[in-house]
Amino acid sequence: MAKQLEKKHPLAIRWLHWVNFPLLAMMIWSGLLIYWANAVYSIRLFGAELFHFFPAGFYEFLGIPYRLAEGLQLHFFFMWLFVGNGFIYILYALVSGEWRALVPLPSSFKRAGRVALHDAHVVKELPPQGKYNDAQRIAYTSVILMGIGSTVTGLAIYKPTQLGWLTSLLGGYEWARWEHFWLMVLFVAFFVVHVIQVAIAGWANFRSMITGYGVTDAKKEAPPAVPGAEGDLA
Amino acid sequence: MSDERNDILSDEVRELRDGQTWPGGRDNTANLIGEKRELSETMSDADAKRAMSRRSRRGFIVGGAAALIGIFGWRWMSDETKYRLLRGTFEFNELVSQSLYSPKRLAPEFPPSRITPERVNGDVGLISEFDAANWRLRVGGLYGTPSEIELTLDDIRKLPRTEMTTELKCIEGWSIIVKWTGVRFSDFVAKYRPIGGYSYTTHANRQDQPPYVALTTPDEQYYVGWDIESMLHPQTLLAYEMNGAPLTLEHGAPLRLASPLKYGIKQIKRIGRIEFTNERPRDFWGEQGYDWYSGH
Image 1: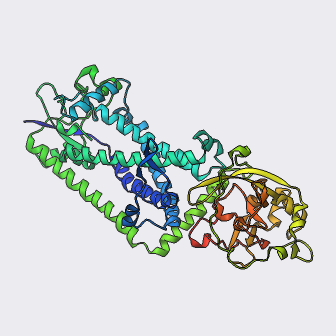
Image 2: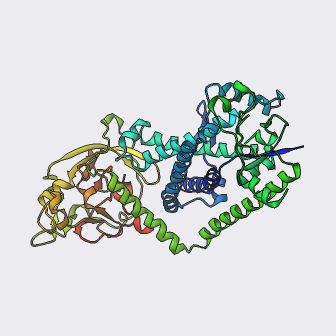
Image 3: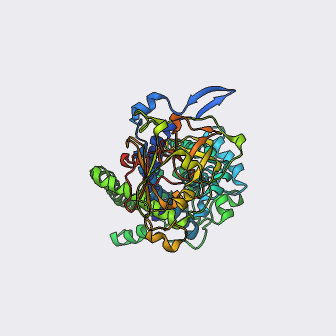
């Protein structure tokens, strides 16, 4: 069957996406070195502790204890790179028009529900989509907002006097730290789901984030073919 | 298809003028939002495969090389270089802070009802035997002669009394709200002037004044260095009371530093000596890899 190459991800987006991976990893890793010194958060239900962040074995396995100073050094170094990379990403998406592939509309939530039903094998058909489906639009826009949230809550913890107004706005120093921590948990959750979805979507989809291109079936007389399965996920 | 044609196709996927919409009409967010679609001309299955594998090769080689450079670059960087880089970042961050922020900005204060239970942390410099009754505060780097004097707690209590209820933040990540009572360091300086003879009253004479203050415990086991701007801040106190009662030994009796501008590690307990100095003083935790400024 005749094929068409389809441009999926611009070079800048691919670089920014992949560079973000080690930067976010370093932010989370150094964040854990810092968090260990005052590991107070847990999931509770009706007063009972279901899960404590984190069990002692987790820290020992990763060699986290007593590395607070190192954690602070790494965190306040990589923050520049992480925020800089994110800033360029947002700027690029806005200027290039790439945001049109990423941002959901109010009607996206309905279609995202259909995507979820499809992924759960309840319905057969995916709703029509562009580069990303509507569930992806919501997820990818959310993760950018989370990045902004981590930056803002981080600043509120880092400079609670100079940025006292911001710290108060977030509910005070203790709440800002709590928010900063839970945003990290959300990032990890996003990462896990993202990797699973990429694995399910398959090689062609993964490759498109490296080469920038995908292959679609061409139909005679009607060039824009229905995107192949590779365009469905992740 | 010739190689040349192949190159054109794969290197520059042409945007088609017609039929650029995505499927699904108005049931597709991409159409509603005007997302661009870029497709190449139609080609055979084999050509598409060839074009993609060429792109894959290039992409994976470049990406793999970048990943390796990143990983091994970081691994092979000597600990010394890494340490210098990270410490340098602390200094850089402080420069950014100072250029963006006002040293006059006040930290939030709280009503006494917000005071939280006390918490003790850190006993470096507090372990040695200590005779509180015969304690004197030694002050060095003063204007005139002698340049070094000794003060009793009563001498300090005679200075204007200031109260504040502020948040003490430990570098470990916890915080408590404490009511401190003591003397503003700026009031202290007005009476005990440093080298140069001014009390940092105007910016014009700042440059002739020692830019740092060194504070140490009587046994010199714990020591901190402060920049003068933070010391002169109205919320930096030489404190002798905590939550309405005289300081206990574990909290730094008879005199300690209290300030919401820096982490608890900088708020030295049991001060034995204060010195105005032109050299940046050593700092106990600064020597252990923490930010020398540790400012908020």
